[in-house]
Length: 316
Image (cartoon, rainbow, N blue to C red; front, side):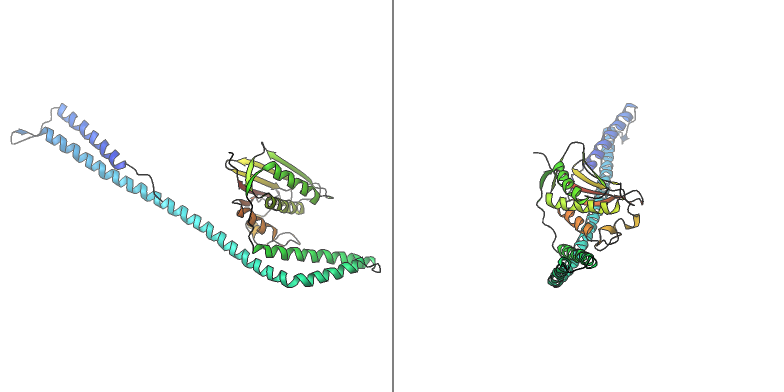
């Protein structure tokens, strides 16, 4: 990285030269004279003083320039190391997800057909007129578990194929309206309210509307699992400089500080029956769109707040 040229050496040299002129003028004005062998060398001495001071100022200025350049280079080196550390962490995370995804894809391939056969047999048993109520209830429970296994294997195989978003400018209210429509059906029959709003006027962001909807619905589903009956989930968007922040907040028990970063790791889940895949996929999707996702608050008992930050669309 190249920096703009500095001119401290010339500034210091000029200042020292001016100081020499002032000192020489003051000395001459006070009657100071320099004589050698009866000849007057006052003017020569004054010029030598000014030149000496200018040279000293030049040397000092060069030292200042070198010090400033060194500090800048050190700052750039630190920043580069930090960026490399972040990139290495993301690369390691992506490689880990890819390895898990490859394993998931292999498992899904091996069990997909047997799982479909088992599901068909259980479905036939559930639909059988000769089945007792206990058999039907057991069959329905089995179908739910079979479907859950199928969803988990599908999600795992998806980790090996990072999403390719179709990023385009989209209005925040369009995203919120779509997610609200789907989320209310997700919450149907539960005594949990949903509050959706744009803080300020709607803004435009850069993102893939389908993938954003998937991530926000995942966060709403997690919030619903954590929020007690009679609680509220809020979904908001707001502008903050050159980013747009999408927030999902619940009234659940919150996230302990020690698990704040772990919640985005595959297979980590603090919820009974959770797979630990949803947030890992959500982070992968958000990052693919140039954004970030994190738990904004982590106080136990204060509810959980998740923030998605995406670039704001530049108005033409």
